[in-house]
Length: 330
Image (tube, rainbow, N blue to C red):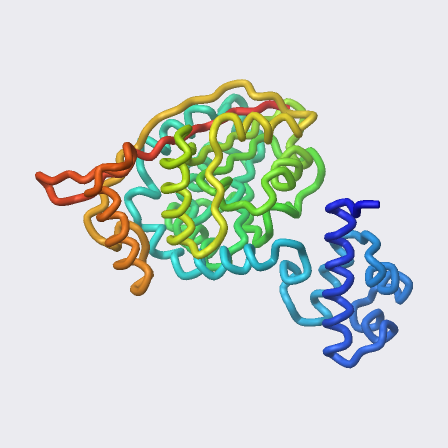
């Protein structure tokens, strides 16, 4: 009989905890005492049986580690946290990240009726570029990000505008620390391509979204041409040193088909022209930046790609970046 993916993940998790326990020279009884979890639960966990997330948090605290280390896909999560921790201040001041056209298009999908009585979750908020304008409209806002440095940038930015109605949540988007149906609007911008388990993230968003609530997702849109799509994905992977999966329209439809309670109400498309004149337009990494800039320059000058263009007159690169934004209702 073939083992189901969830069962495999539980077995992997159980083995991780067993190795950590043995490395600490603890018995199951000692781990139970240190974590406040019953010894029977420790036994079940190490046998590959599913336990509650709160149990895992208690065990992680006993080992003095982040709970993400215990969860599946932790290599990807660790890479994302490291990369965006280093890029937090850089992205806060990057013109592409706060592009007004992108912002206006995304915000046009927000329902502001009774916003002053409603709650909003900025999922993977980054440095708070969207958090701030939305906090001016909504009664209560939660800004969630997995990276401490990003949350600090968001907090500094929002506090500079005297916004005090925001809760800052350091958490994985796959485990949103909010109650069922507790949020009226969820907005997620420029991070879907970075999520390891996109279905899990969306099901969590579906769980915490109130009935009649709105989920807005905005991200890059993958070109339909496979060569173009691979080039764009490869550039993003090199920038972030982690898996990147920019979706096309068909892949989004497949993703949404797995959400029983959400229906797509509206979608909009647009193209952003990104000007790349030096390595800092791509990344602040002093090692990867120049090499990546040289690679993209060669691609642009070769003329083989429609979306990466060399502007000979000005001596710079133009990347035609397609975007898509969806509005889903529960």
